[in-house]
Image 1: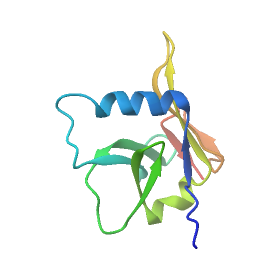
Image 2: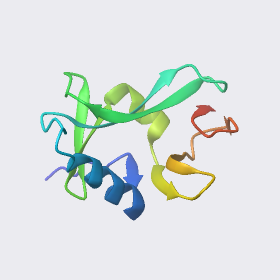
Image 3: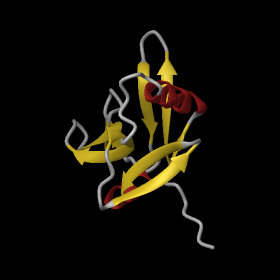
Amino acid sequence: MTTIEIPITLTDSAITEVKRLMTASDFDHSQFLRVGVKGGGCSGLSYLLGFDKKEEDDQLYTIADIPVLVKKSHEIYLYGMQVDFEHGLNARGFTFKNPNASSTCGCGTSFAV
């Protein structure tokens, strides 16, 4: 039996928020949560987090009954990353803690490796 290690983790707070978004009446249930990276941002790479359809080069994982897509080529940048959701007055939204980042920008949405 082959065990596939999930490259990212979602905190309890992030799981709660994603599941809340997935219960919205206009949610498209043919989509999955996508976690990834793209070129750009003030540090070189920016995080992607949103709902999307599965593509051929995606790996599909399940975290707490949430289907999560990660492009195979992005896993090297995301391995060990934790996605959290903060409810603070000054910082509300998803945050990323990435052990692979050599530096991050002030807003925390882009990083360098």
